[in-house]
Image (cartoon, rainbow, N blue to C red; front, side):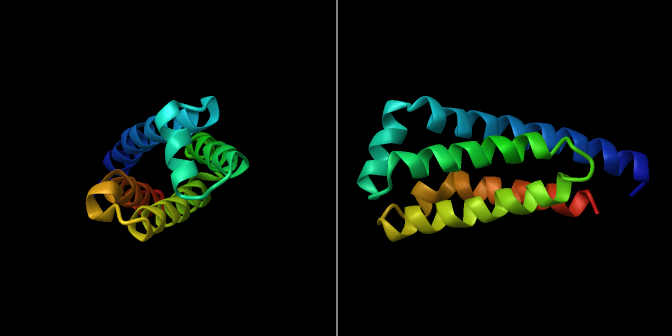
Length: 115
């Protein structure tokens, strides 16, 4: 693949992933009712919800900082592993983990394209 094409794909994919994580992180930080209920159901504190939301937003921003792009993608992948584990261990199965699985692979694609 030509370098310019690879860079364009990486930039577009980074924007899509970043928008997703800005949205998901934002819902955690503003305390969207469904998100608050889920964290309580999982036995996780409000402080943990704020921390996860903040990390998701930081990762989204990091995708656009040249020296941090790959680290941000790896960090977001780590967060999604935690999300998948949380959903699976609380009996929500693959259906409950679906978006986390998708975001894990999209962040992984960003990581690979930014090599």
